[in-house]
Length: 85
Image: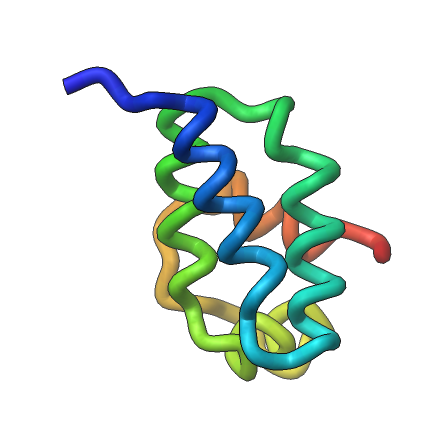
């Protein structure tokens, strides 16, 4: 089944803006805006799954308080970890 890339991007953008906390809304939306057009279809699907990770876990990972996340795509984890807001 072929994925509708534009629809997937819209879902990712929406989900990144409405996380529940303003800090994570800003951080994740800025991160998504920077990389959404640079990654392929498979990475986009992984990115959508990345947004299902709890805000607190993502925040701690981003700030170095948590060393690992239960997420298998190292490419996306590295992009996020090295992203500067």
